[in-house]
Picture: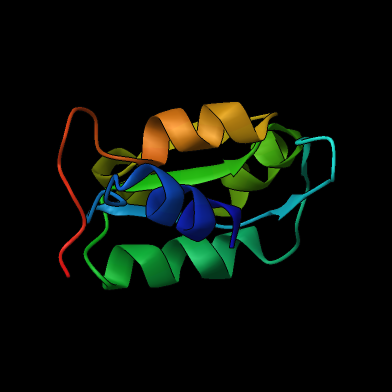
Length: 97
């Protein structure tokens, strides 16, 4: 939700190859989540190449099959600033109306 709002307000599109999951505090900290393996497998099946996950879920990536790990890039983040830097297009790629 935070990324969608930031995209709307900045008129920067969300990258089409990025998936993300997590909870964000009011102070912008990214909290750990459950079901990492299933969420990563679903992202892989959907053709996504980059996944943004909470840093505190680093150990959960051990459960993801090696072939899926090799086919994807994982970005482990602690703050919403990191998420937005990774998820939003750079420059002036305006949102489609």
